[in-house]
Length: 468
Image (tube, rainbow, N blue to C red; front, side, top):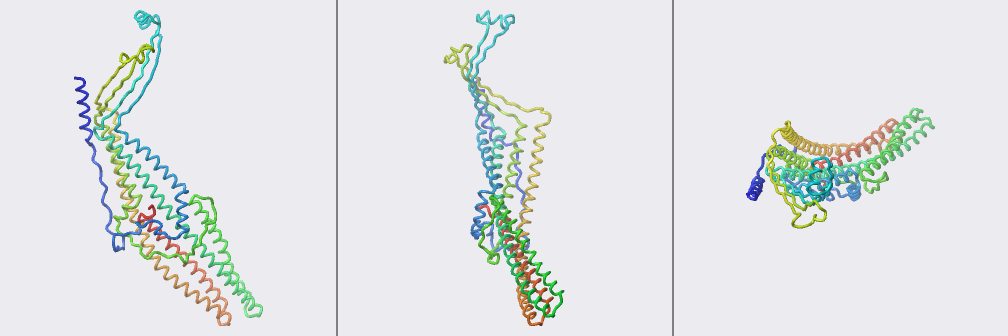
């Protein structure tokens, strides 16, 4: 009869193990059909391009490869994956019983004047009692309401979250390295412009000095020319400082000590991709690591609700133990006389725990609702980032076209002003003004070109590119 009862309990456990007491919350469908002011040709997107196909500059590729190995944020992300994997492997063992081996030996001597002492002396003729035991215990909780299954699902989602976190770190790292390198090329170009303009100002100042010696101009002309020359001269140490700071920042980013960054590229030789198709928002969401992480966060939240709700229902626990036991060390392993065994099963229903279980369930539901809100916010931010980068790419293209024409016009104006000045058909103010305008226009042109390159990289990252 006892064996029948135990078997019945085990059968009930197997039947109930498929039960579920909670219903998962689904992801809200809030993805727009198109990005703002875009009409994609097809569903393809630059976000699907492999990293080395999108960024084909060898120097940038080498910097990124170094960063992926040595950057400390990247290393921490990889360690987080290792830790989550350990927890996930542990959760996979949740269906197995717990096993405990215990070996114990004890001796006690009751008082001769106590009831235990008198009884012991009377029946055994000894003043002390010994006890030796070795047993293997088994503890198994049936997963009736899916508590263990939800714990396993939550651990899996948490493990996958760490992988998405690594991808997010990598996409951000790739973008930062590329943009840092482009900023370095911009500073190189601006330094070259400043030095060229300084030589131009030196030539103008020498002519004005000659005119001053000939009594054709006053000292005011020399002062104005010197002031313009000092503008270009002041730019050089400032730009050299910024170059060093940018090299240091880029070195730290790739995980190395501050050093000079070798570069063979020039800003004016960097070519912008022609095809910058963004595709559809739905495809973007399936690639963005932060969106995938938000989805997995909802899976974790659903699992926690399931665990909290299962804790309100009865739990079935099967325990068993067996081993050897003896009051004498010489008979400890005398088999089968020293063998003993115990099997028991019980159902425990929580009744009153000061509202703790119910509070845990309500808190888990609130956290799940917060997770849904955070998912909505993540989608909104992602769509907004793509729209921002698309706008930058489009408008910076128009700005660069205008700035390029302005720079070309001012280059010709500066040449004409110098020729007219040498022939006495233009005064020194016209020359100084033309050179100052040329300096500013050429500096602005390099800035816009760099912003274009950074916007393209930003668009690639915002579309989920950079981790493959």
